[in-house]
Amino acid sequence: MTTIFGIPLAALFGQLLIGLINGSFYALLSLGLAVIFGLLRVINFAHGAQYMLGAFVAYLLLQYIGIGYWPALIVAPLIVGAFGALVERFLLSRLYNLDPLYGLLFTFGMALAIEGTFRYFYGASGQPYAPPALLTGGTNLGFMFLPNYRGWVVVVSLIVCIGTWLLIEKTKIGSYLRAATENSTLVQSFGINVPMLLTLTYGLGAALAAFAGVLAAPIYQVSPLMGSNIIIVVFAVVVVGGMGSIMGAIITGYVLGVAEGLTKVFYPEASNIVVFVIMAIVLLLRPAGLFGRDG
Image 1: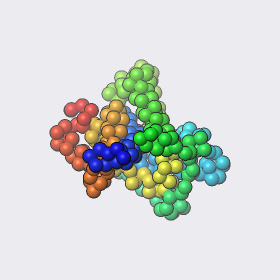
Image 2 (image 1 turned 60 degrees about the horizontal axis):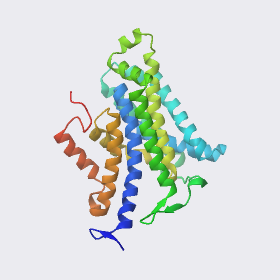
Image 3 (image 1 turned 90 degrees about the horizontal axis):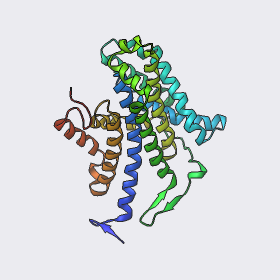
Image 4 (image 1 turned 180 degrees about the vertical axis):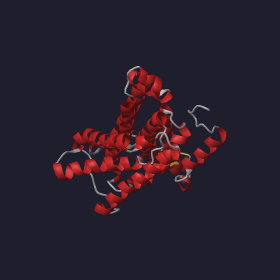
């Protein structure tokens, strides 16, 4: 059996795969956080609840309407994104001219309310959600066995992350969004509906969280606690990447996921804290984050 530093190669690649899968969710969730903070300047503590909502919407669509995984992958983010847009339009937008702490407290309270509601109806235990038949089983790569669904998660999350970055950085609507955050009055003078842009931005961030939730449902089960279990790590990823940096969120999400997976191989006791150790080191050396802009 081939080994590296006394560790079987199959075990090493297995943990790398787990790291990539975790990194995929970190990247998708931190991307949504970075979009909302970078364009709205709101620290969205409800992001974990929106991730959980995406998984639960997919679960409920299957249980009560018979809508399976593939349609849910589109429908669930649209539903959660629309819900997020309504919240921004009628509630969150009223707090923009106040201290940022009010927005943070509002989204934190909303997260607790959503999580509490689902815990009341479904309890704290997870609900099973089967992967689609097309992606069951796995592929023998020779050096490891790759479950098809987990490979799909890594690939599709990377595609969505890059697509979102291109939308924000390389398109006309993305330039309008970025300009609106710098000088909304000037942008409105050109006839652009800035409040609608901000509403759509928050809806996009919520939809990204819901998309991650649907991807996570067959792997982690559907639980009211699934959002609160991951959101603290995701905030650490955003801080390391640089608050508001979209590409920073993507790269850092995958890198820290892999770092966490490798730590489970070489020093398992530290696997739960390695992300926060890296965050502390980065903040000491570069307070704005790896990809953030100083000042």
